[in-house]
Each structure stands twice: as structure tokens, then as C-alpha cells.
Image 1 (cartoon, one colour):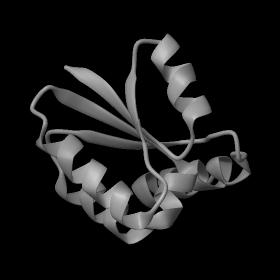
Image 2 (cartoon, helix red, strand yellow):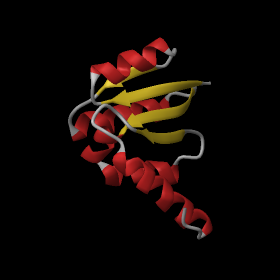
Image 3 (tube, rainbow, N blue to C red):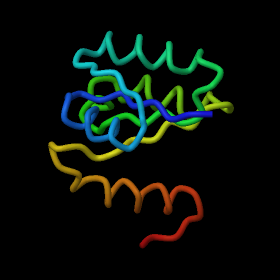
Image 4 (cartoon, one colour):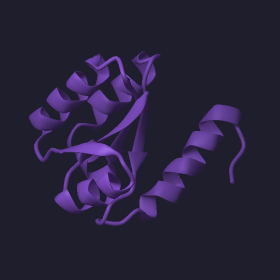
Length: 102
């Protein structure tokens, strides 16, 4: 089982490649959706990392796949554009999951 990165920029892709994670650079909504569909179809992909900016191109589709997919984990990661909202997002996940705020 392996990780796969969907990134909006080459810098994140190269950094993750140094850690052994292959990646695809996507910019437009259609590119993100197509790459996500292809990644989910790959039987050896267990975790799909997707940068926050790439998620913002199609948050509805990413959320749908997160809820429907049981054989792959889709994880939004911060990128070079900042990750200030990541802490807020994590707080919301905890609140939604167990009803406790951080």
C-alpha cells in the first residue's frame, strides 16, 4: 500500500517525493477531479494526500469521496499557501466527531 499526492504546485510535489511519495500536479477543478478518480481506482493506493488549495477547487467532490470511500483515506494537507485554517478545520473535525471543542 502506498501514498499518492495531489498537489497544486511542484514545490510540494518535490518535497513529498524526497520522502518517497509520488505525486501529480493539478490546477483546475477538472484536473483535480480526474486525478482523484484515477487515484481511487488504483488498488495499491491507501492514502491520498491533497493540498488545501487543490481541495478548494472542488470541495464538494472531495467531501463526497471522503465520505463514500472505504478503501482509501483522503487527507487534506497544508501547502506553501499557508495552513492557518487547518487548525480550525481540525477543531471542527473533533467537534463533529465527538462533540468536544479544542
